[in-house]
Length: 154
Image 1: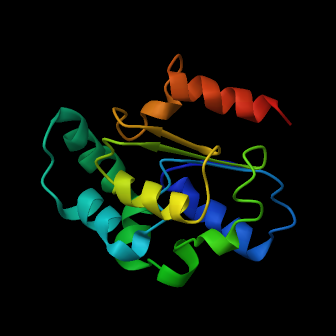
Image 2 (image 1 turned 135 degrees about the horizontal axis):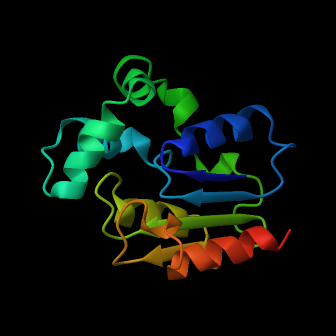
C-alpha cells in the first residue's frame, strides 16, 4: 500500500483494522505520524501561506470539501494517528518505506524523522532535506525513482 499526505490517514485505518491485508507499506509525506503535536492541522488550515504554492494548496486542497470536513469537523485523533507499534515490519526496508521532505510546509519533517529513527527505522527512511511537500511524487525526482523501484520489488 502506498499513501501520500492525507492518504496516510486511510493507510493508518487499514493497518489498524486489517493488518494482515497490508503486506507492504510506503508512506510519502505522512501526516499520520506525530499528528498529536498539532503541526499538521495548524500549518494546513490556519497558518498564513508564505508563497504561491502554499496559497494554492490552502485554497484548492485545504478548502476542498472532503479535506475540510475531515480536518475541521470530523477529525478522529485515535483513528488518524498512527504509532510505530501499529506498523507491521516497520524496520524491514523491503516491507516498509517512509519518505519525508525536510522542507515540508505541512508536517514537521524533523520531528517525524526523529520519531521513526528513535524506533529503529534506518534503511527504510528516505529523508531529503531539501524536498517540499509532494516533491517525492514528482516524476523524475530522486525520491520518486526510489519509490517506484521499491514498488517494483514486489
